[in-house]
Image 1 (cartoon, protein in one colour):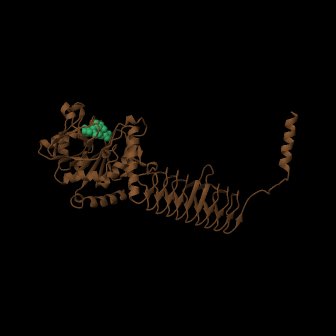
Image 2 (cartoon, rainbow, N blue to C red):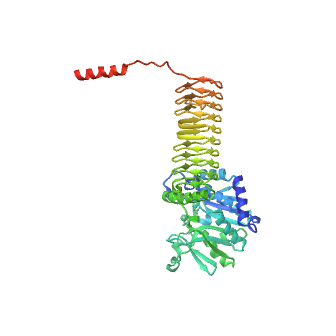
Image 3 (cartoon, rainbow, N blue to C red):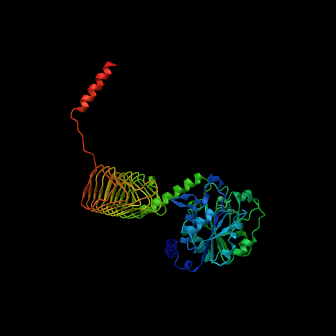
Length: 469
Ligand code: UD1
Ligand code: MG
């Protein structure tokens, strides 16, 4: 969270040095969605895009937009969502909406948090993950400029299903839900994105005034607009891109939203100086950090927690997760870096090499077909093809330590716990079960047996037998 807060501060100062930082902000995140159309045993908001859950995206945007206080409204018994929210934003208060009676009712589940008296209240949906902090800041700015209610509007190709924004000059007069709209109102193309900002000073008075006399007998948050206008307060609509308010109800929408997010992440990476040879084939996580002059070849997947330093190359068909790649390193093609892989400067990890929970120091190489798990590989060491660290005895994991400049011959099995000293040399095909001192040669193999002419005699005997039968 510290990172979120720091990031938030930086962003806010850039976006608006004048008014916003002085205003306190509570973000109320509605996460009481049913999510039945996902056809999943995982709650909707715990599905992930860009390697991060939907609710994590929303909490991160809320914090970056200055939402220092956070309230999350969950459905009955949704301890899993509550736990996830706490983990992501330890300061968040979690409230339960016991009955699903509408968006205004859901917001009022967080009444206690609203009563604390923040200047700005942002109402966000946990299933709408792509809203950008700068868009939320625009909503807050509208409040700072005097509005009591500010909503996000957009103009979709097909407005059906959305609340229509009824304008009155520059002001917003009302939001009319599809089911309650007159035929004329249904022809309005400018619709409600769902998220909105309420002035903290007026929020409770407005919300408490909202009734449920409508087609769905729900307490509509959207009615806050008409209530505010009745009291002579100002309501405005801020136009935004459809992607900002893209909500997710199905697996197909989850995939579409992932696509939009990936395009954003790829564009950001290229903007920061990363070369993506075929951007559409590279999959990034929201927290992927790529340095300058990093080259990513086609078909590479970044799971969460990856940092790649300047000048490194990630070649095709590699999969990285929880890994750090040092300056100028060369990874792949077909490499797999698993959590805890820490690679130094100019390390080479080649095809069909898997690295897990291991430190590979500067200039070390494992170019082909190897498994390095729970190990340290010293500076400049060379790991031959087919080398395996046998780190698991079926119950426990053990460590392998390989010294600086060591040479591990091909097809060696290093049975952990074991250590190989600096500059030691392991002959091909060895099974190393005991520590090897520095600069020693260790090999383990049976005496070779060579029988001259044996193969020719064998084939002749076989051929003769076949002819007889
Ligand atoms: C809402 C808006 C509509 C807007 C649309 C944009 C209202 C009344 N309508 O409609 O104007 O065009 O979003 O997508 O707000 N929720 C709860 N508890 C409830 C009801 C809803 O937590 O009792 C949460 C849902 O999980 C969801 C969000 O609030 O995250 C929006 O609810 P939803 O039912 O999707 O509202 P829409 O009908 O889509
Ligand atoms: Mg909806």
